[in-house]
Length: 56
View (cartoon, rainbow, N blue to C red):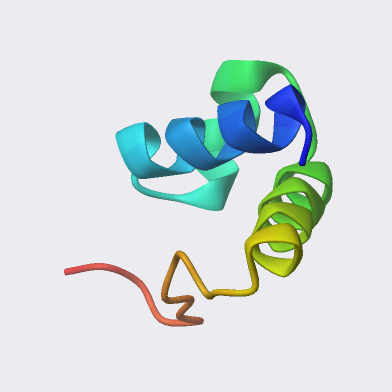
């Protein structure tokens, strides 16, 4: 587990989307997604529900 993975997770929760979290952190959406996936793998649990649809 790495602090940047936790930071990415908190940013996604605060921002509501991976894209908005990436913009806030100055990273790409893909890097934020990989960081959250790495955190989930380290913890052995899914932390966020992902969706391809838009939020109403």
